[in-house]
Length: 318
Ligand SMILES: Nc1ncnc2c1ncn2[C@@H]1O[C@H](COP(=O)(O)OP(=O)(O)OP(=O)(O)O)[C@@H](O)[C@H]1O
Ligand SMILES: C[C@H](N)[C@H](N)CCCCCC(=O)O
Ligand SMILES: [Mg+2]
Image (tube, rainbow, N blue to C red):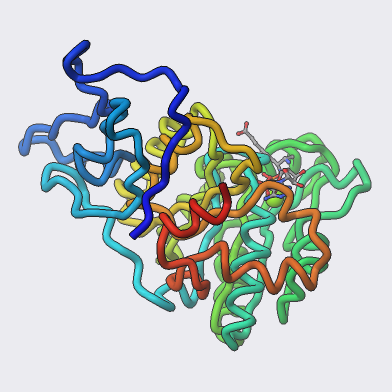
């Protein structure tokens, strides 16, 4: 099997010169007395994977068993992501819409009937295409619906308030998504911004988030993450929030750069145990036919793709 050779000129240190562990800090197991589950975190699949010494500066991007002290990143199974799947992200502008399009395209190519639902679209005063417009252009899902649109580019609840419009009501959204699930094999639900953005109100008047939607619907969740510096923390925070709620989650990189640097390879190595896909930067600008034919190559079989070896993928994209 081929290995990926990282940029040998990048600054590194050998264990002999500096014995500090190069592994990123993995949260120590929390006392069994506390009810807080151990963070799923992100991290190398094995200590060897974190070795950035010059002699072994190779990305060993094959997932291996997680240490028993952490919630395991169980390998996703082929076709597992059917039914209702929420697509959230570590932030706004991370590529949720493009990733949603890619999953829809790959699932349709695999013969599934796909619906995409965007509960709250904000920023429509800008006049550009909505997320559902983009998804429709790129992937042509069988059904594509926006449930509520608000003019200002804000979180949906804030956008509803400033416009004096009705906020999204949690159980109306739940009912709309369940109705699509009756008619489709896969319903992709794209949030707005990240996991804990206030989306609308519950009957009690309290705000709800995409995390609440995931727990109410019992849906699996895809976390779209950036590839660059800062993503390890943002991804770990999002995975931990989902893990604490008992929501199964996997990660897709929204935009893998054309010219990856050391940090991108290092992040890939850390995230591989959680990854079920990675889209190239620029994918959103592709001609729709090219996008649809390419999408399965960016996703693992869990998401109806054909990407089954991250080392081969890394060789091909570098
Ligand atoms: N793989 C990609 N190829 C091309 N453009 C991308 C890619 N990923 C993200 N972008 C660009 O980055 C920006 C944000 O992407 P996108 O609209 O998918 O973000 P988002 O996470 O859906 O944000 P929002 O919270 O507004 O829904 C867009 O301008 C999009 O064109
Ligand atoms: C307008 C933007 N593109 C998104 N649709 C909404 C992002 C809300 C983010 C709120 C926040 O986390 O502060
Ligand atoms: Mg979007």
